[in-house]
Image: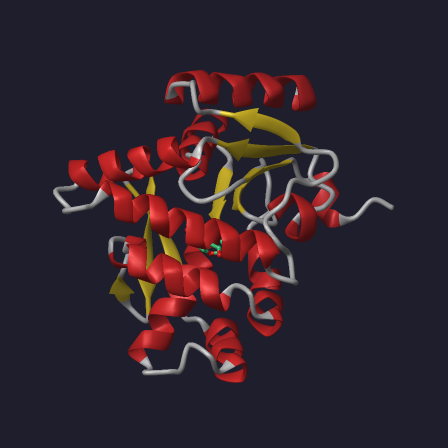
Length: 228
Ligand code: C5P
């Protein structure tokens, strides 16, 4: 069946935390002049809104409601997207490790995932979409024409995160980052609903030994083969 979603070119990039999905998705979207969906930001925004509301991180019905009502805007600025929650620019705030951990916890809730599903699908529009997350190829865009599952060793992913934080002048502890990534991977891979796993038709891409430029070229080459 030809649905609206499979008439729009979609590249899904899934994988564990810190595999470089965000950086690569942005570079590929820039090169193709396509839209981008950073689906993790929606879970992070839900976690942040919940903490603003002093909502319990265990209360699924309240969290589902917060996710459904999320007052968020992604505003283009200098070729990037400003993330504005309830009128406040929270682009930096949602990147905190603590918010990532909370996001991973609430992302295991069926109601929260259902509440965010339609919002994510609405990002698909012409000329095309690069969607980054954990279940883009399996659940959100199962009809996507190009699905990539991006991995890297845990140590390499922690090191990349460490360098990123250091660049921003944020203090970080490498050993703590390794532990956090392992906990988050474990939570994401073992949840009952939409767990982190490659779609059956995903192309596996281990980036441990690859540079950002090499990974970007590889994805662009795959995009060319798929979309012409
Ligand atoms: O990708 P990012 O690290 O920003 O995602 C934060 C958390 O949101 C992940 O650890 C994961 O639990 C959750 N997430 C998800 N499904 C997605 C994207 C993110 O469950 N598609």
